[in-house]
Image 1 (cartoon, one colour):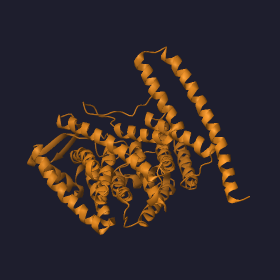
Image 2 (cartoon, one colour; image 1 turned 135 degrees about the vertical axis):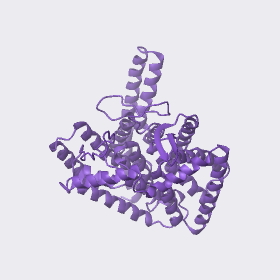
Image 3 (cartoon, rainbow, N blue to C red; image 1 turned 120 degrees about the vertical axis):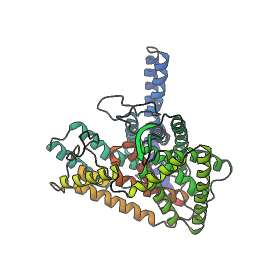
Image 4 (cartoon, helix red, strand yellow; image 1 turned 180 degrees about the vertical axis):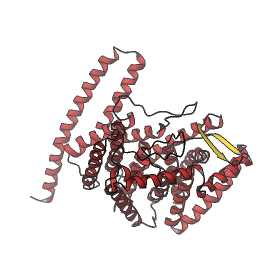
Length: 485
């Protein structure tokens, strides 16, 4: 049998299950329509519209999983990662918990997309994974062992369940993004969606902030005290900073001109202002680290253009400060806030240091297996009313060690090394502006990992999984010439 005949047979063999899946999908669609039609007749119009939108969204992963993934991350950006314990008239759209004991709505939708892709593409159509699932096997064993240890120690069952989801779901999200965002065109579309939603959210946050309805948070520096910030949601800032990096990198590569450049600037300005008025030192340092990596990794001409952007931003910031009426006190506050990063006696810095020391002392009791999922470290006992939960630690690497033990920590250190090694193979990223931007954002990830319990916040970890997956796809050998949809 010649090569052409073998290829025709292969295509015919693939077409049979596809037609079967399409027929099965059509039956699902018709059955869902019947159920919806009956339900609409029994409920008010508003509820009928909600049911219709919900059903269409639920069916979308089966027929158009890539578009469903776009929808998921758009929802993820516009909603709030965490605002528990906060009250006030500030802007937030909570990620809904529809059913007790189940993940939030966004996470549930991600699992629906994953299930649809596993069934149709992987199990039925036998489509190959873009990334080997072999590392999942030891990692799953580590997580399951950590869950067993947590149960044996009598750890809180609710915290154990949340920790299990936090350890597993972002990894599955990474694999799903690698599978679906398999072309540069799809990656660009995803970034465009994240940019558009981020611009809308940043604009709303600024309107609330300048009207005295920002997120409640007490900040003190010298004689000035602030009670509100633009946002406290680190997932917001992660998305905003990554979009800024993408815009800068595309401009450096002369891929943003005319209307596209105007749209990018319109999206970047509110995002940049929110980053400033959030007063989050970690994100400021992370942005600086990411820009430093971009300067280091960029081609020589790109470094010149990046320097020009830096000068433009400084001039623009001065003009914005005058236009918005920002006082000298506020500018002084920003400077003092930045310098406080190096102040060991600053309240937050001191607390984080003492917290890390306490976790290390607790881990010495069982350094290999840690405290298990749902584990808590000993109270610090330095405040009478310490509201910081003891099931987290403000250092991602210690957090991982505490929850899933030394094997889990070694696994993530290995993954970080492999990621960096893969990225550096493409240095200096000539004609690869998206790869340069996404790879440079690892500076922000590092800053966040050193000062916060990143896995505790699912929106953050899902976004990092998305950006890491897109970086992985772009670093593949054919990444520079990926096909369109």
